[in-house]
Amino acid sequence: MMPVEDWYKSGKFSNVLNLNVFFKREGAGQSLLCIHGFPSSSWDFEAIWPILSCKYDVLTSDLIGLGKSAKSRKPLSVALQADIQEELLIQQGIEQAHILAHDLGNTVAQELIARQREGTSRIKWLSCSFLNGGLFPEAHKPLFIQKLLISPLGSLVVNLMTESSFRKNMVKVFSKVHPPSEAFISETWKLIIADNGRQMIPHLIRYMQERIDHRERWISPLVENTIPHQLIDGVDDPISGEQLVKRYEELIPDAPVVRIKNSGHYPHLETPEEVVKAVISFVSEF
Image 1: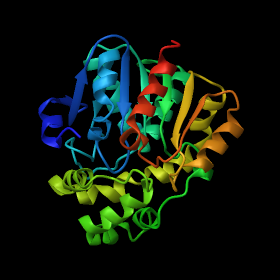
Image 2 (image 1 turned 120 degrees about the vertical axis):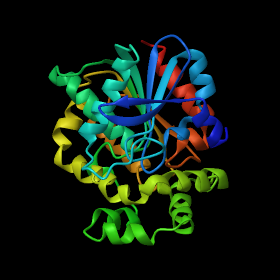
Image 3 (image 1 turned 45 degrees about the vertical axis):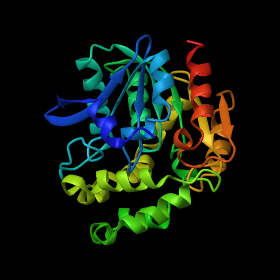
């Protein structure tokens, strides 16, 4: 992997809606917005970045509360994260883009697509490639630690988290064939806890409840194919693996699905070549 220091040296910071946001942009051609998941950072896309940035104008950022973006204790919502994505693209002069999203990023992407369906989007979204994540709350199986963090005990539990416990939980969601590297674990943990970021976790994880609260609004655009979309899924993921694929196929039988064997919750880290191939093949249709 590209060292995390090099990743952040190659990006920039921007004031977006009065919040300091780290972002990285590289390449030329059609624009591709990459939205990372919880609880990691834009560095997740490092393995697929070189090839994607040779094909597209690729932009990614750290979501608020994660990575090196602002870690404010104000209430966090999926709507705010979506506002940041829209405003950042507008600042960068981007009027239309494809999306590649993962985990929490999927939920942010669903909010963006819902806005397009409602005619309120500030960006024209051309397509969306979803990686593993809770697109449908009924097909999402959170880890025990996630259930604790979203409970009333969350603010207490988060103070008991250590790099060791973080490692154990991350290993659970990766495939046995492609476990997480020690660099990914240690550097991601450092990013989480920097700038008092540990206290952001209970606020951030509320997105799981938002998925339930906004289920119809966020799923309808997918069922109606508001924009072309596909699912690229590491099926060995206990959180959103094969059960997510089956639910996706039930609700959207005509949408493309790419099942990746021997890959878990982070297919773009575990099997980057297969993810890049699926993204490029899909986006090239448009």
